[in-house]
Image 1: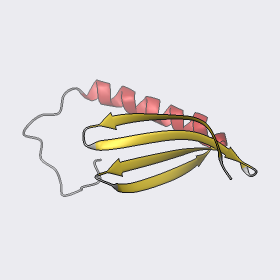
Image 2: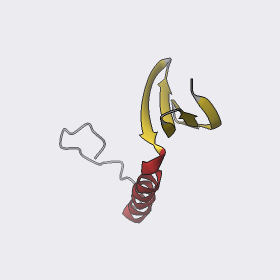
Image 3: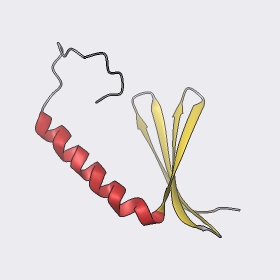
Length: 83
């Protein structure tokens, strides 16, 4: 049985993200759940990887800020991954 240490949620556009720090006999982990119209997907990150994940997210925030506003006439190359 998991023990919930803390949970926080954030609404981003039409998505609800839940971040739950939990632990069980195998260790501590972060469970991130995305809920879009009742459809849920989740990922589990062992707590040993949280510093690495934070560094990546901080870098993404920095690059996003440096990239400036998204132009309204932006054309994609067919890649729907958001990259």
